[in-house]
Image (tube, rainbow, N blue to C red):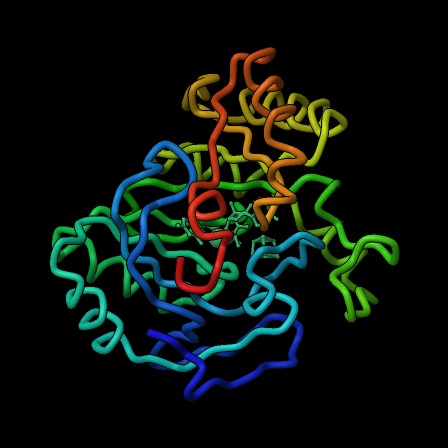
Length: 261
Ligand SMILES: C[S@@+](CC[C@H](N)C(=O)[O-])C[C@H]1O[C@@H](n2cnc3c(N)ncnc32)[C@H](O)[C@@H]1O
Ligand SMILES: Nc1nc2[nH]cc(C(=O)O)c2c(=O)[nH]1
Ligand code: SF4
Ligand SMILES: [Mg+2]
């Protein structure tokens, strides 16, 4: 569903409001491009609005400039069901879990027998049925600074706010204890590894559930083929060196991360 027809732009700081529905940026069928289900045909539901502002966000129109059409649950479910072969649904954003209605959507999808993956930054713990929590905690290298912000935006107050909110150890612990999960770190360069290793040690200490090296995925930063080409070989080597998984970004390789891919 292209949302270009009836979009709202929301200039608030990320709280896109609540209501009987969800702010939807795009809804499409593709292959899961990331993580342990990479390659699986899936319907993607992308909500708008985020509580963080990664400088590299590949979904700028859900975070820095939230853009969406409001859709009620029935319409969203009907669009999902129109993709007759799809068994997997990926709920993503923006940060999908800032919207209370995301829980209703996940309950409806579970009742209809879909496998659900939620792509989340790990700062919100929902009381919802989720088959795979795909958690991507945000590292210091994601923080927007005056030198490191998307073109044309003033990162302003977001440097402090993002830095303060990006890691919530209690929420991360609760997520890994509650759901089948993967921890998917966006890696910009070697300098990210100490923070990843420290966070993992803290999480392993805090969590009652084991976190295996196999649950940890390193994903190269890059929203275009060119950017990805500059990071992926190094990130693959880091995965080998540390015994973590590497995840490709198939949608970037295949379609250069075009809308609705
Ligand atoms: C747009 S986010 C939406 C879900 C949630 N807000 C999050 O960050 O996990 C979807 C996935 O894309 C990743 N991502 C965003 N921008 C990226 C970039 N430039 N390179 C690599 N991964 C990126 C995020 O880390 C996350 O795993
Ligand atoms: N094909 C494809 N796979 C994805 N996996 C996670 C995505 C996301 O933006 O959350 C994504 C996406 O945008 N496209
Ligand atoms: S948390 Fe996710 S959606 Fe929000 S700015 Fe970062 S990558 Fe984008
Ligand atoms: Mg994406």
